[in-house]
Figure (cartoon, rainbow, N blue to C red):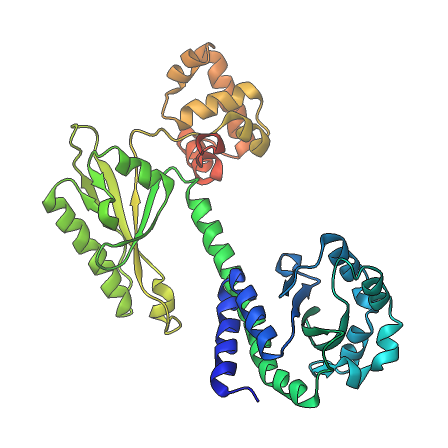
Amino acid sequence: MVSNSVLLKLIGHLYDAATDMDKWPVFLHDFGEIFDAPFTNILHFDQHEQRFNFWLTGGHQLPSDMLGQFQAEFQNDPRLIACNRLPGKPLSCRLSIGEEAWHQSVIYQNLQAQKDKFPVIEYSLTVILPEETGSMTGLAAMRWRNSQAFSQEECDLLGEIIPHLRRAINLQKRFALTDFRHRSTLEALDFMPTGIVITDGEGKIRSANRAAREIAERKDGLSLARNILSLSHSAETKKLTGLIQDAVSSAANGKILPGRAISTTRDEAAEPYPVMVSTLWGNNIRFGLGILDEPLAVVFITDPDRPQEAPAELLQRLYGLTPSEAKLVERLVAGDTVKDAAMTNRITIHTARQYLKAAFQKTATDRQATLVQKVMSAPLWARSQSTLP
């Protein structure tokens, strides 16, 4: 008889594994001890999301060639066939398929043929949990020849674990998707030329993109030290902190303030960094949908030392410009006049105006300012991947 404390410990390890794949071996170890099974196995298959698929063993590691055989012959395994007839029900191989059916199976015959590599599995306790979405989870405890078959009482004990197994697998998928989206979002922010810092109401940094970190590394007007966003001058830091606190506290009370802007003084008397503070997650809280959400502030920092770039090759692909037209538009986006762009590209001002006229037609614009605005609203000015390590 397994005590409640031992069973609860096992279930705890199961939920640990839901948030960390590295914890599955701990669960399989305890699972094997509870069922006196020297070999355990858990697998998950999702026909729509194959990145969620996994196959793990505990107690003993199958040789790679035998693991390949197991996986190839899995669909014809008589234990699987029996479990599919009674989905969600734990089955002992001796109580469900009998000794003869197991001994005549291809999997058993292969085990016999390779018993010098791996002990022969004689007794199995298995359960298959199919889902309507096309996914399937399997859990099994296995014993060698010199042991005994799993009893009905052990089937019932596994039945107590099954609801938690189902929840843990579903949680694992949700956590994996959330983590993937979070990491993808942060990586996408690293391609932005604008510094972006997300903070809580006290100015503590939750995340900062690469541009923000590079600005801070100059130690000229802005700091991210000690995980706090601060400016070089205390008065400016106090004002920035106040704007952050206003943005967060107002959102917590259901009121979303418009973005607030300030400029920071730089130690080297260079052009100040324009900074804007806004609210993150505000709308969820505002409409009563963000019970578990924490309002955060997002701080945008424009780097005047970094010219905005519109790579010519991308302009060609996006708008159908010729190489010469694209190079001209690239210089205009960088802030050049038509005359300056003509000189940089070593063409006459007349030729530059002809290129500009063609660019107007291809981008459906009629003025230089409109053309630049349209190009700048596209993702062309994101940081080039070649600048990233």
